[in-house]
Length: 77
Ligand SMILES: [Zn+2]
Image (cartoon, rainbow, N blue to C red):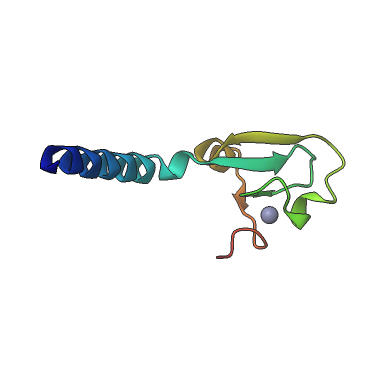
């Protein structure tokens, strides 16, 4: 019983560690339009409503490399 509990705890810690390590690589969304400067945490963001071209999903670091900044609407917590 104890071993099983320990295994679960280690598994949970690994999961937390993995998600922490992967934090900068979360999936974000950008509008491919020429006037878009932000990236969004959700494809449902109203900042993307005005997007006239396609919405692209990519990693956060890729969006930053494109010169995008975190959206002020969906980036707030
Ligand atoms: Zn947004």
